[in-house]
Length: 467
Ligand SMILES: Cc1cc2nc3c(=O)[nH]c(=O)nc-3n(C[C@H](O)[C@H](O)[C@H](O)COP(=O)(O)OP(=O)(O)OC[C@H]3O[C@@H](n4cnc5c(N)ncnc54)[C@H](O)[C@@H]3O)c2cc1C
Ligand code: SF4
Image 1 (tube, rainbow, N blue to C red):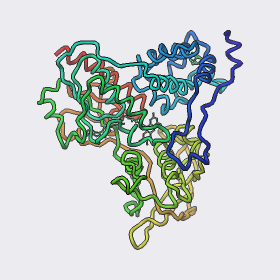
Image 2 (cartoon, protein in one colour):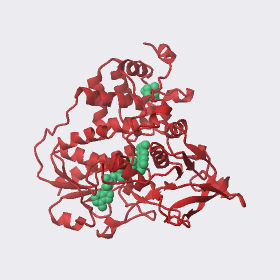
Image 3 (cartoon, protein in one colour):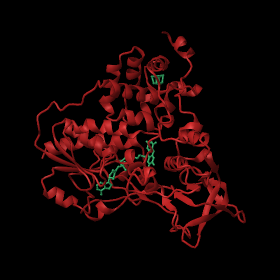
Image 4 (cartoon, rainbow, N blue to C red):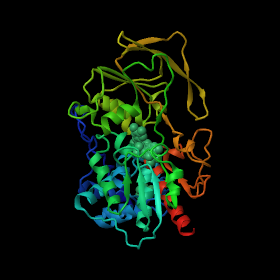
């Protein structure tokens, strides 16, 4: 097929469940390509000599190669190509912000018609799972080195898989009773089905990676104790899960949650099935979610599925400045969530039983750009109004927990609380201790956490073998 013919093929959009149906269920919203659609979409790729798409991919997947393989129906080869650089493709195909990464830099993006790279990645990963094609195996003999990983999120899992394949004895210490990090407790089922995450994690177990669950490093055991227990190197990847609040009057009323708590109750503990499960969640009829990022959209869309009358997104800037993925915003709106832009909460008031019953808000307008380059929201005097609500979910961000830094000597942090690491090796300021993912960077995406896990894995391998 010549380039002109390729250019004539229209971009295929990913089919999705009908909004009126999906707002009542937890099943995956995006349905994914079938084989014929995937092949046709793959044929749109121009196979550029200088593939700009790869410049937008934080782990440099060989995008034109795997797309060409799909186009000619060589699915096994496409899977191998992706798995060379990405150990969680079914996850990344679903949650990576492709519109601001590979699809943004694709040469066809100028015409607004970039190749649907994310959907193709998802297709091939799902094809692999259904047909059980790839099998991760350890082909080298044991090095006899013990390596510890703290945190079983995308950063920790990636480093673990990389190191296990090289013959190291890897143990992951995880605070929760299950692996996956935000992939399991944060991102909801309807966006990232948990059986998919579990099956990608299972591949790691097959590599011999061991888990120590319910182990909060810094409390249950310290890094110093792990080092004394003959771990040759450690990778610290506990994420950044400490919720940020606005410290407003009434924020400690019942019914005001952090998004982290709300999503963990529903996703990890399955609280929507209470009393069949142990953990309850209170979700009222009028719900306000504060924030405009992915977490806010996930919290709002999760709350919507608990049958309320109204769910609001309260955001102090406009939709244009929202950090959430465009697809999330689009899906949230389609499902009926109301967006109150240029609005900021000021305080919450409760009833006699201490439950939140209304919030006071103020209208905002956009002023001069701030340090982030986005226009600063400024309160409009006298524009206060009240909104009756019985549940508030605060999703304005999260920060790092300093538990590990407090209980370990020699770990330097930046003024924003991130662990200071060497960007080439991910080594912290203490030799033998490496770190990556949200604890070490503000990038806060699954793929960047995985990229750092892989970089650390390479450097840790060299480090332990040269000691
Ligand atoms: C609701 C939500 C939605 C998101 N949506 C997207 C999205 O669509 N696309 C995207 O790219 N990114 C998204 N992100 C961001 C992304 O999930 C994170 O950037 C990524 O998960 C960071 O990976 P990590 O491995 O550093 O940490 P995490 O995923 O946070 O995993 C850290 C793990 O360490 C464990 N842990 C913490 N402290 C300790 C300790 N002391 N001892 C032992 N274990 C510990 C935690 O229990 C957790 O399992 C989202 C984040 C949230 C919260
Ligand atoms: S930039 Fe776009 S068209 Fe070019 S190789 Fe990458 S995906 Fe294909």
